[in-house]
Structure formats: structure tokens, C-alpha cells
Image (cartoon, rainbow, N blue to C red; front, side, top):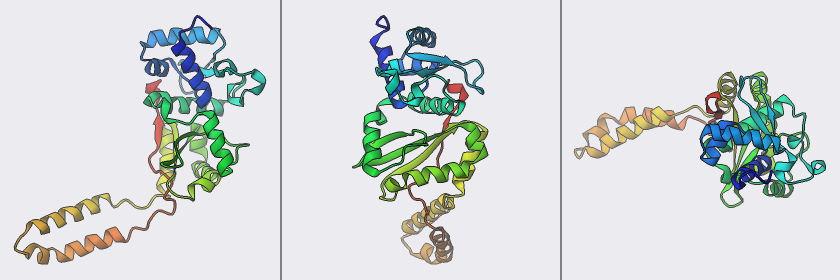
Length: 266
């Protein structure tokens, strides 16, 4: 293990801390290395016991690397379940989705480490047992961003239940305002299913109507004679009523946009 470059040891530790699986493509992006070099060093890291090399249905022959307790620098008996052998398929998917979000976007430093996450759980009294670990960004001042990874089979089978359970878990924090709950899943049918479920909880979009109203107001303002204001008064009233009639979201903390991790990015 000592023969591995320090940057690789650091990458393995980040995977363990954020409970992420990685792939040759994501490691290449994280380290700014050629993909072939990243694939080679991951094989060496697996031989050294920092990762387990796995396969995941739906990814073909693309190897998935699960961090171990050695990557975290802790005793095996103290390791969280995600770092142990025998990881279930849903847990592998969550690790894959977390990894794609963190390393695929290059946002490693944005997410809270294990110690900071635990402090948040304890302070807000967030239940832990029986729940999957999310990615968390932010702080008390700027607000927290909770990103929940969803395995594709679960996203397809019960998207509404997943959203409900995540909201129930995090409502002690979300109800104070200024925080956000978002979901991430595999691109394709799973993403479509989650997006449709989220759309049912979002207010109807008024984007086009609002833009039309803004354009009309600009025309009125540009007319120094005042005739446009009279001529367009009825049209403006109808547009303004359409915008005002849309109810505010019942869940202002729920983000309607979904994070998609795609096969092409592995």
C-alpha cells in the first residue's frame, strides 16, 4: 500500500469518508489522470486492500470499486456497513450514485465528511438506523443541501414512497427553512419515474406566462404616449391573473430537478 502515490491514498480515503464507489473514469477525473492509468492504479489499490472490485448489473463489464476499512484507516470492527464485504446490490447502487455525483462533477470538497454529518444528525435529532446515507453540503448559515441516492429498481417501483420517507426523516431540519432536499438516481427509466413523482409535488410552472407578462410590461414602458397601456390593459390583467393563480409549493424545500448519473460517465 505504501507504494501507491499519496494522491491515490487520498482518493481512497475520500471514497470511504463519503461512502462512494468509484470507477476508472471517475478516478481519472478526480486525479486528472488518463483513464488507462486510473484503471491500473485502481487494480493495484484493490490488491493492496483499499478497494474491492465489484460488478453491478446495468453497467455491463465496467468495474466498480468499493472502498474498504483500510481506505478509511480504521479497524474492520469499527467500519460502517458500506465498507464491509458482502455489500447488497441496492447499497452498491447508492455507492455508485454517490460516486458519480461527487467525482463525476468534481465537487469532492463540497460535501460534509463523516464527522460533520454525525454532528448534524445529533444536533437536529435526525434518525439514522434503517436509513441510507445521503450526501450533505452546506452549513447552518447558508443552509444544508441533502442529496438522497436512489437505486434504480427502487426509483421505478416506489418513487412516491421514497420521497415521502426521505422527507419524513429530514423534516426536523427542513421545517426551519433555508434547506433543500434533492434526489439522485441512474439515468433512464429510473430518472423518468422519479422526475414524474417529483413533478406531482411541484407547483405548475408559470415560466412562459411570466416571460410574456414581462415582455408586455416592457412594451408599455417603452411607449411614451400611454396608448399601449390602454390597449394592452386587458391582456396584461389576464396574464397577471394567470401568474397569481398558481399556488405556492407545499414543500418549498423539495427540489424538483433531479441529479442523473449516467452510464456514459463511468
